[in-house]
Length: 207
Ligand SMILES: C[S@@+](CC[C@H](N)C(=O)[O-])C[C@H]1O[C@@H](n2cnc3c(N)ncnc32)[C@H](O)[C@@H]1O
Image 1 (cartoon, protein in one colour):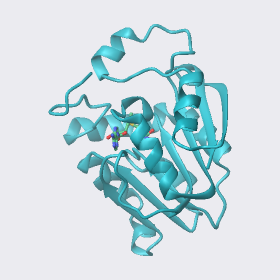
Image 2 (cartoon, protein in one colour):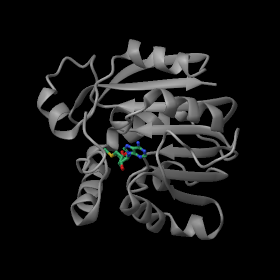
Image 3 (tube, protein in one colour):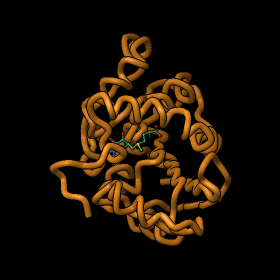
């Protein structure tokens, strides 16, 4: 378990190195963004929240047509980067970015119709609290999509990176149990392939 004082760059990209890493992630995570967007099926009337939004690339490319899109990240530099990238929508009042932790969301109950967490869930120190919070801010029938490129079902040895980056590997069964425990009623887990992710897990949960 990595202590809070100095998280690795992947868990909390900061400074110039963090900005460079976030820029690189835009390309590396391209396949994961597409798979998450396909599962989310965002519509014009959706109010969308991205948890651990990083550079804000997914929001600008796949959520720019929604009624509202919001991004949350605990890295101040990522919030700045995402806000800069989406400044036109933000100026028009259709996008906002906040700094905070996923286990305590700064929005009222039922604020969103859809949410996503891409390549971030494995870093969350309090997964149950975070999923309960996401469930709270979603409206009834609201959907959450979680993308986990590296996971306990993919057959790869991630031990070196688990230690280096301080993340946790989840199996589909574990993730399903956590989501049901947080109150989600329908959970569907599928697998696909993406760059450097031979068994990318895509989890769709409905409130
Ligand atoms: C590997 S990056 C992925 C960024 C983005 N989703 C993407 O795919 O480009 C993980 C992101 O999750 C954020 N993050 C990790 N743990 C978090 C937490 N507990 N609360 C809020 N943000 C978190 C990090 O700051 C980072 O921006």
